[in-house]
Image 1 (tube, rainbow, N blue to C red):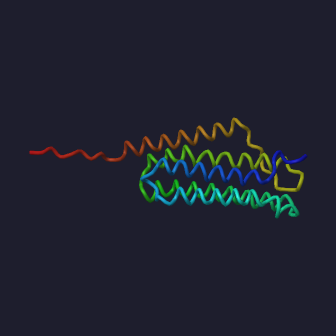
Image 2 (image 1 turned 135 degrees about the vertical axis):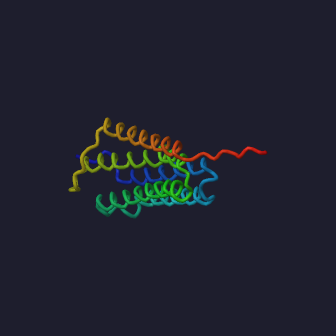
Image 3 (image 1 turned 45 degrees about the vertical axis):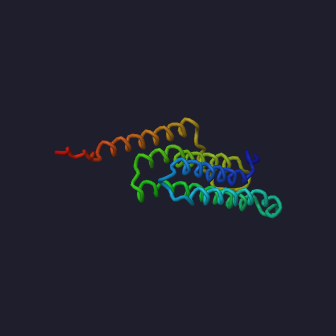
Length: 170
């Protein structure tokens, strides 16, 4: 059985994750360094160049090698987005914005990539380790469950944070 899509699909997925992360970091303008969206855009450009040069230079390599470097690029994109989320929460101390960033960028990319890797690995003829196929109901449940946990944590932290009241003037 042939794979459902070429291994370079994961480079395109990584490019999408980098560009989506760039757009979301632009929306949180004052919370991130001004250079971060440009760094993410540059990483996406590197992926597009890699995608354009792949057919010329890697046609003689086995599919496993093409799959490996493509997945490494996609994982790098996920780690960049997760690192941005951790920066927002741990360094800047913005829990509410961190939860919104997690729901809009981090969690969808972390859920989508293993799904596509599982679909690719289970449809490949070459011997790769078998990964269980993730069904759609499980993915939807994981997405909504993670979103509910993040929103619940945001509510708990918002309520637990002491509010500062202005002192009345005398």
